[in-house]
Length: 335
Image (tube, rainbow, N blue to C red):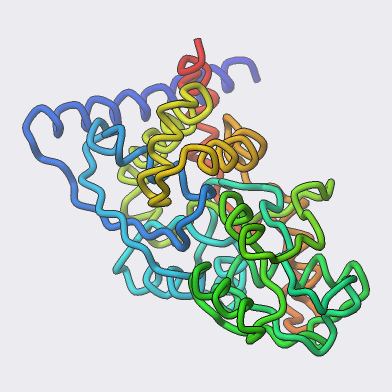
């Protein structure tokens, strides 16, 4: 048994060494592999993919990454399946729903495993029950914010069919719609929460304070892509965990990157976004949360019987993270 463990450990080290050597040679020769990666919202929950780009971690590992904004997990997952963006940083809800339909899409990392949202409402809503019959704005039907709203409100006694979920797009669009009472509720993340307060909207429920594991988003690929391009994924994940390390250990630098992508001049809301989302919700080793995936499956099985027969592990492939962790690669970043 001991010899078998040693053989497995050495095999992992060999794989990582070969990948590292290959990427170093590629960089030295200027032969970076072009790769399109999608993200789904301009929010602090996307910081890891932004930082890997800004700090040249992708290039360090032989990848020339083009980041593409595709609003909402369903759109990003569609691009994933078509091969347009073979790696996506998207809401887990879209990945899971797609997988249940036989797409083979899986999460290889779980970026955010808790709710990052605050529920904002117009003056006519004074309690959760008042949302019945009202219009609730989400980025995209089936997206991460939509799934989170349905899950939490269901636990509080408001069923999905009692609320009209409206695909309203970007956060500025949703805020404008709430000012005209076209929408009565939406979910926001810091720093958009500060803008909502300025507009006179009211926070009804802080989802970040709920002690509930929930797979909000993560890095997704297809099983077919894993078989075809495992080395590309391996190099992407090295850059990704290095970005996490940077974000957790360089507050000022991480905030500058946030400021750039959020397009906010004022440093105060950026600092709030960093402290409330990045610091609180980011883990050094970003494994997807099985309880968080199961929570979504429990909700989904009411509409899709396949969800009731599935296991959380059906929707993940954590082999790349295990390689990085068992080799000591991640621990070394923090020493």
